[in-house]
Image 1 (cartoon, rainbow, N blue to C red):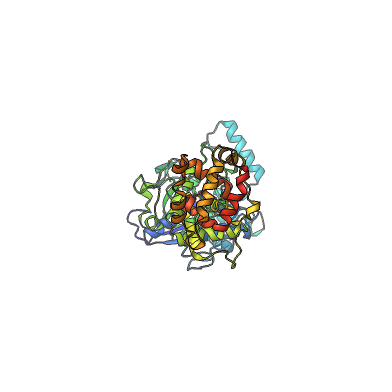
Image 2 (cartoon, protein in one colour):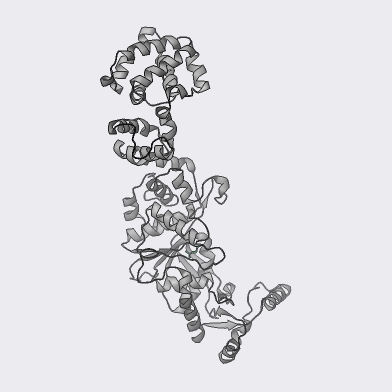
Length: 498
Ligand code: GLU
């Protein structure tokens, strides 16, 4: 897009539905979305489903769901429509055919009748001659158009090739991330835009669509950078303005290799199912290769949508760091109110784990809010709440005591004395005063009285009541469990204590 191009910003994300939406694709989608929002532009979703063997409707649905989960609303595309539809490439085949035929009629493309064997023989001959160019030798470029048309009409198989102008010189890709990248036009070949089976090639269909849809900026993975000079040839042949390109880096695993299953989750839905928050996930991916100021790790969606620019996108490969993602996710969880955390995280997670049953809440709202406030600071992933809350959903006589914690804390001299003192102090509290502060006040004097460290007193209580030595503050832990269960569990652990 030249600097005097005043067209309103229109960008597109054009996934091929040949698989799930992966983190790399998700980041491309995020950048397109954010760029459109930051520039008051239009974000288009187009389904590039021209590969019939690998594209499926199911994958399309998975991608649409992932986009919805990511919160990347599109202004034109599947489900929302728009003036430039259809937004599925398979529904645009006539458009590509007409465009290719127009280029042939204008002398900017031509029919090629070379068979695969002939092409291979010509390539071999060029190699034997030591020719550095081993592409298409433009054999059919000189066939008289009327003669070519006769052969087509007679049913001879053909492809359509673009005519790269003789005098085109270098093709320079103006890229917002990589700067100017120069390609030698001769290397581009008179490449095929229409195959003999009547389908368009990617480089052709993409440009026909991007031109027809008025796309001004193309933000996509840098695996497509080498396609771009060919696409520029198509824009020029079509007489359409060339957009500005921004080829963003690949996302790699910590070992510097292409992200794959070996590194763990790769698709958006795996992250969703693992309990990451959409906002945190979008935040993390957005900052993987782009930074408004070089230091933020947390950036709100609003800031992303107002401040995103292509100026600060790094061309270095981005490294997926699951620990950092977890950290960002934790930041988002910790920023939620207790009520929100209870409703959006705790309850759905406990229901999904089969602990809570929808519509049959075991406790009152205050209890869930207390549970939320107790668990929130210790939660990095939503699913973490399940293990932490399990002690509250287990019958007293079925609570399993962690062996290590039991040996360590109940097996220590003084554990029994601590449990007995706790029991006696807690028995004195009635149900009405069974809340964190009162419980803590009742237990507080025990360490001094028994001349024992706090850990030696409180850890045996935790092990007895929770089954492990890790839990929120003892007051909250026991308040949530309730008076009756607390006393029963202490009683049950006494015989195990030294
Ligand atoms: N369907 C292509 C892909 O998924 C789109 C590439 C492009 O953005 O031009 O790689």
